[in-house]
Length: 366
Image (cartoon, rainbow, N blue to C red):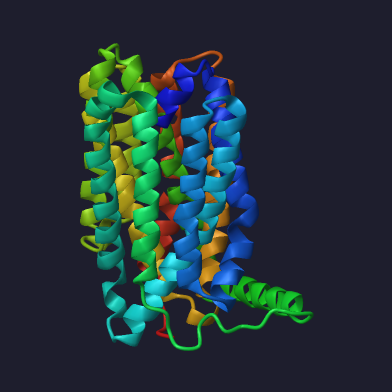
C-alpha cells in the first residue's frame, strides 16, 4: 500500500514515479556488482543482509513520512533487491544440482514465488483492518518485523562448502573484473543464453507495472476500503501463475501475447470488474518469467551463475526505469487505465525470442 501512502503524503503521480525510478536506479547500479559478489563470496550472507536493508527503509517511511525519507528508503530497498537478485537463483540451482534434481528448478522457484505472493496477498487482505486500527505507523512497524523474520529464514539456507572464502585484497578487483568478463563471454557465446537474458529482462521488467495497481484500483471509482480487495484480486492472479510455473512450457511464446490482450482489455475500461482480466495478465506474466528464468539457468554454469543472472536483473531494472519514466510523462495527459493499456504493448516484445527458443536445439547439460 505504499503507493497510497505516498499519495496521502501529498505526492503527485509524477512524484511517486520518481520514487520508483530511484528504487530501480539503485538496483540498476548495484545489480551486476552484487552478482559478482555472490559468485565470489557468500550467497547466503547477501540473502541475509538484503531484507534488513529493506527493513531500514520501511523504518524511515514509518517514522519520517516525507519525500526525502521515501527516497532514502527506496535506496536501501533497491540495494537489498540487488543483493538478492542473482544470489537466490544461483544458490537454489546449485543446491538442486548438488542433490541431483536440477530439473525441479522451475517448479521449486515458481512455488516459492507463489508462496511469497501468497504472503503478499495475506498482507494486502490485512492492510485495510490494520490501517483502520493503527494507521500508517502500524502498517510500517509490521512491515519492518517481517523483514527481520526474512533475514532469520535466510540464515537457515545451505551454503556450499568453500563458498564465501574468496579473499579480499589488492587482487580482488582484478578477480572481480575477470569473473565479469567470463560471465559476459558466457552470455554472448553460449547458445541461447544471451537471448534468454534479454527475455528475462523484458518479462521481469514488465512486472514493475504492479506498483501502479493500487492507483488503477482507485481510478475505477470504488470506495477506498475496496481498493485493497481489488489489489488482492490481482495478487491472487499472480500467485496462481507462479504456482503453475514449470507446467505447459510449450505455450511460453503465446503467454505474453495473451497477457497483453487481457491487461489492455481489463485496464482500459476503468471498471472494477476489469481487474479480473488484469489479474489473469499478471498471472501469465509471472508464469512466463519463471519459465524464461529456468531456460536461462539451464544454459549457464555455477561459476558465473549469479553474475549472468544479474545481467538479466540489470536489464529488468532498465525496463522498469523506462516504464516508470513513461508513466511519469503520460500521467500528465492520461489516467491509470489508458496507461496500463498502452504499457501492455511491452508484453509483446519477448514473444519472438521465446518462440525461437522453443524451436531451438535443447541446451547442453553443464
